[in-house]
Image 1: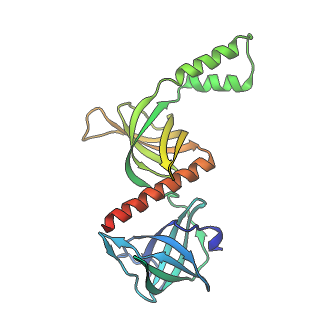
Image 2: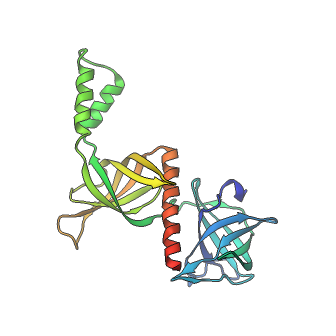
Image 3: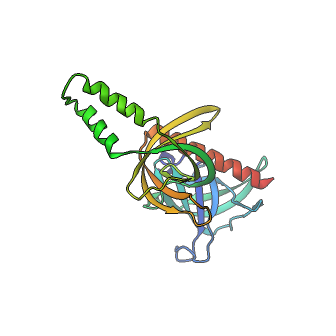
Length: 253
């Protein structure tokens, strides 16, 4: 069943279990990556790295794995079997001991980054114009063209902002405009995935907005993506994991 949910390269978080199968309070979260599926419910994962050092999992110790996938966040338990080297990588073989279970937790891994974007607030006027255009109920023949023109003019008013963390479900960004919880914004986000430029146009809900204490005239906004195509979300998640892997490689140097 795990094969149907998890893909090679998916991010994994690891926490140690005690003898009762409960999470150890002192257990620190380790970051790994899915490498391969083996026989007899065994999988191969990357040995966690911290501060450029490999953190070897203890043989026969039980752990809980959290898989960040495009289908959501899943967890299962496992037993550490052995470590081995493959090329320049140190890998671990673990035996999965429970069925994967979907959990209601932050679904998407968040990448801390600085990424320039453009955004604009969606006004009540724009919402009303869009609804009228969709309904097709026009008072006179020229009204449709007038609505389209007004919407085009609204679409010219974009603001510059900088994302500070990004996930497949939303982002956090800083700007000089004061927003409030419940506002809707349209975000233009560009990134390169496998040498191909991706351009996303995403409608987002403002979850929270507050003034930055350390930066005068700057506000920090937390958003949740409201209207995003599934293919665009999957590309975004792949990009985030690609950047995270680059950071991990740089930590090894």
